[in-house]
Image (cartoon, rainbow, N blue to C red; front, side, top):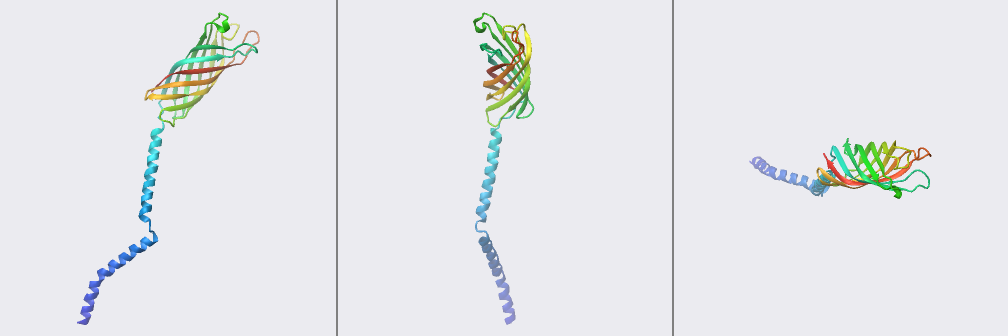
Length: 225
């Protein structure tokens, strides 16, 4: 009878022992890692912060259109290559088409025409045009502003009065410079300025071919597709 009672008491105590054992395991885990819950919370918060920053950064970067078409006004400060000859200015316009191969690299075709009806008060009219091609590198990490730089090479054409040449000439030409575009709408932007060193190699008078170190500044509108 005693043996039976002892067995029944042991069976009744088993659940309580199991509960005590589980409680001991929980207490042991808390001792080993008292901040486990806080660490997990910090991990999730950090992960969400990284994802949010990545999303904001991706949103802030301007997407690159495939084609940019520009048209605007251009000012050229012309500097003859002959020592002692005065510089003069021409006014006109230029247009360009840029095809964006990637978000940062594109190819540009640029055409410009400039004139001065009274060069250095000589009552002679000078005309000057350029046909240029080359690469453009753009920095598209702002939502609306896109700075860029470009190097273009090609041909310049001038009449006799423009640089004091013996006759109408074609010559090698190149530009190096850059500018800034500001997006107003998805398909329309303005170009506040584009400033470039413009080199030409016309033959001047009887002294032969000279290097003309000119300046070109442009501003206008941009259509994006």
